[in-house]
Length: 139
Image (cartoon, rainbow, N blue to C red):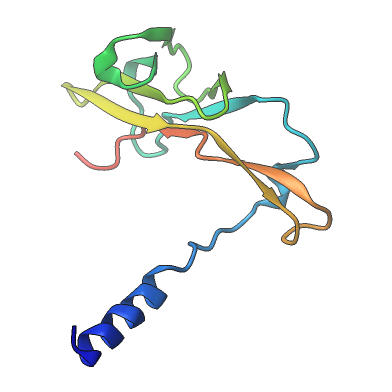
C-alpha cells in the first residue's frame, strides 16, 4: 500500500469516526427513568383536517401485523400518546380521507434513553426517538 493511499485512509478514518452531536431539551429531561416511556403520536396538520382518521399502533414492523391498539379519532385537534417500553420497536399507520382521496401514512420509532451530564443544570436522562409523526407532508 502506498503512502498516499495510507494517508488518505487515515484521514478518512479520522473524519468519519467522530460521534454525532445531539441537543438535549432540558424541559424533557428526567432525574430517573423507570423503563416505561410515552410515545407521542402526531397526526394533526394545521392546514389539512383529515376526515375520519384512524390511528393503528403496531408492535414491531407493520408487516408483522401485531396490532397493539387502534384509535378512532373523533376530534382532529386532539393528541394521542401511548405508554411504551424502552428499546422496543413500534410503528403506526394513519388512515384518513382528505379532499375525496384516501391516504395512509406510516411511521416507526424505538424509544431510547441517554444520560446527559453537561447540557442541563444538573445531570439527567433524556428520552429520544419517541415520536411517531404521521402527518401528511405533501399530496
